[in-house]
Length: 517
Image (cartoon, rainbow, N blue to C red):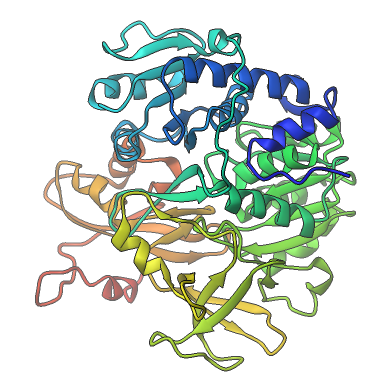
């Protein structure tokens, strides 16, 4: 009988004990077995503990999708730490904010990203350790212990007790917020173990599966492909991105990939290619989509490309990982639904004043279950707006602030968002964060960012600006690209002499949306 893991790093220990020689990860043309994953992670954990990492300390991992990144996640957990994955596209100012906000004690980073992180280190007072994959940095500040990742991965293994409670924090997942600064979602071992096991179960996965992941591990959708794979003892085929689709296609065929998680932008690229040169991947038996609604007209083309695949439509948010899913067999019966709550959880709708709503009426989605976040790191007031009192004594439930309807059978239908956050390319974007970048461009006097419906992106970012000087759309987009991750760069810049405002001087975004784009 298979041992049920209680802690997130148990995934690696259990799979290594059961399947030591089984391929765990294929990355950058190399295969790594489960014994290698467990042994290397325990050695890196030893290096972290030797350099003062204490249980509960936060460790930032700033890397591309790679074997060192995978190992680093489990090493932090084995050492009793809390990992936070930072998107390698993250620019210097935002990285500095995350490191300081989290109070990171250690940074594990790729040497290729040194121009971004190295100038920050002297400004992160909590940092005591830097582990660099590739080589030891030449200009690390005093007081920060530095070593190469390869050296750390050969240290004495740490096998002592760490992270002994399911209630311990396992990860901080930073996501955009309406304040314009990222907020750290606190996830415990319990919530992440439950979510990984539950999702793997309803997707009908097992240890024979080979999961292709082209999504950033810093994106929780990508992270859970790793966690589910190691939980099951399956094989993860890890790619850095979907930038070169032809390479991803070769990986599917070469490794007999059975599971392909995607988002609408990825599927749109595949469908466009399929129309020019037919694609067919019969080995894939499960397709998953979340982060943005999958256009209904994609379904037939995806069936041609993946003739043996079941297609799972899902909805979730970082604060609880996943809310619901639609069984593939119900796709024709419930074509616009995002499904029912995951097993072991409950969802319900309430009016803004907290009253139940009838089937078919719109209400705000609330979620119960062991997969909920503990709250936002250092944001107790914001946490209280999301984790609200439940009906049972002492219970807190997640108020998503998203509007849904529910039919009499309990199936959910997404209607819209209550907050300012824009969902584009499967990522959450704070308009304020983009506006701050725009205001940093000399010559821009007013700026407002909105999301407009887009069949592929979910929402496309459009920036309205008033300028004093000869700025062009190309120049503004180029400046944004230097300051923001790619998915945060506006797709279109619209110039106005002045932006409409309220009597108190606040820009009226609703008025902007009513004008032709």
